[in-house]
Length: 411
Ligand SMILES: *[C@@H]1O[C@H](CO)[C@@H](O)[C@H](O)[C@H]1NC(C)=O
Ligand SMILES: *[C@@H]1O[C@H](CO)[C@@H](O)[C@H](O)[C@H]1NC(C)=O
Image (cartoon, rainbow, N blue to C red; front, side, top):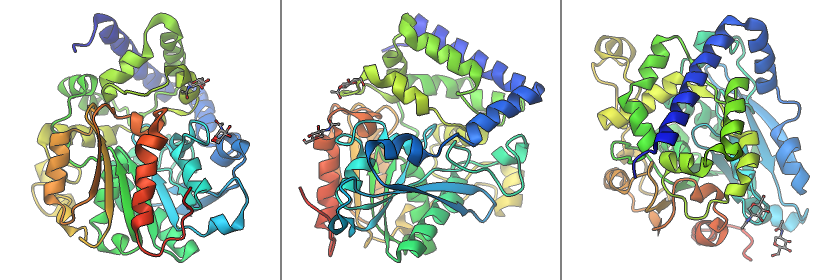
């Protein structure tokens, strides 16, 4: 399917407005600081906004990474208040690109994985990486500083995921189960190659698993890679990617208000989702997308161009300085111990987590993960399909239940 002229036009509109809003934010400090206050210190936390209203006890936690970012975590337990149900292991949810912890709670308690896990007795911990609206900034840097945005997904993996797991492991005194979606799987798998992290992890379940990205078929991202949009932004001095700036929000609202089919736009990014409820888009857009750094987009685009699962490529000479070698070091999947139980769910219509790329990942792993293949599933179906409980989550829970000594409630 080619991008329609209308989609291409909308995209150009979006991109130009993104550039304009970033330029505007850089010039207009007053406007920018209001926007930032709104984004960085939401009136209420994720617990109060989205989780407690559904009747689930939830507490906010903060922890600081080694490089000074203050991450927000939420801990959620069963809505039934039945203590016997609270004996399950801690599970950490790691969201994808342009998302945050809210992604696991966007539908009703019978449909959303975060709620389902809590009601099954898991001790649910919700991760939020640096730069998202549920994080609390940095000890010394402000979001106005260029250095605040000077990181990519390898820093999510080596600092944020490491710190979240360490914190949960320390508080609960128990190995942590990790669940990731999309970019959340890139950073989980990268983190699991680190011996000091993997020793605190009991098992991992990965939705739309990604490490290599050179076979993606998603038309819009491929087009942006070809346009070198990442490098254009960096050259323009745009370091923060925030589609929720006032400008972009207005345009997204306009677009999704009958003028353009937002479902089509999503399809060109994620692949065809079988079970996406498009009447919920307005609600989803109240939470998504979250900001990330341009450098992160650049790192992801490098993976698409270069076919590597490696650290950020600074260019040959800067690589020498950063890594002591001309090429960035690879993340070595064979360092993930074969004793770590792994489960993966992937879809035939997923334009981002391509099956060829997944096979590359599987070849490099020492263990044989349990696999669930859903032919008609796209990239978002694993998160917000109207049928994901039956299709995906029940299967994932069966995997967790099959592990030893787990006091998890079965229905
Ligand atoms: C969830 O499922 C239960 C039992 O199947 C039902 O009673 C309840 O109304 C459902 N809740 C929602 C929000 O759909
Ligand atoms: C789709 O979303 C609408 C609006 O939130 C909701 O009323 C409806 O129940 C949803 N359908 C399914 C199958 O979840």
